[in-house]
Image (spheres, rainbow, N blue to C red):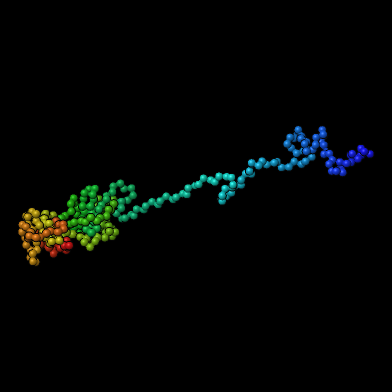
Length: 257
């Protein structure tokens, strides 16, 4: 009777002995030598345990920030389109592509004069004919304003109508020699220095001055006392021994200040 009570008492108190596996080892301490680290026999095998330090492979994303833990791709510089090539305006007198021989002319639109600095040659219009030479005639003067033209011909006046259409001459354009100029082929007998500001002529060859006094022309080896010449002078070539003979025409070409 006492033996029966000793066996029943642990059952009533809920502290019965744990079921033992073969060999007297409790279930929570059992280890299978053939399956170390595996589940105890009789327990279904679950999915393999994932290590905490191993993250799942990131998914490939299109656009937006990269997944956390990944480096952003290197910055790609923005491509800049190359500057457009400057288009050179083509004129009728421009040399054709590939032509090696070119001529560069200075064109003085107000006088219809060309100058080739490479050859030292001037081209000017006299009457209705073009002339050329190493120097301009005495009656023709050019200013400091010009445009540079590149041509493929050695005679720039061949394209003069086209040039005038693009660069028209000013109000002082000259198409021929002035009335006092010597005829073509004739050498001038006299060269005068004319001072437009004073309306005075001087002939260095003869050493004579010509000036206006009370509406009449005077001449002499010296100017009247107190006469001061102002400004610059222009050289005029004439065949007349009295320069004031053409004074009205000279004044239209070279008005005084």
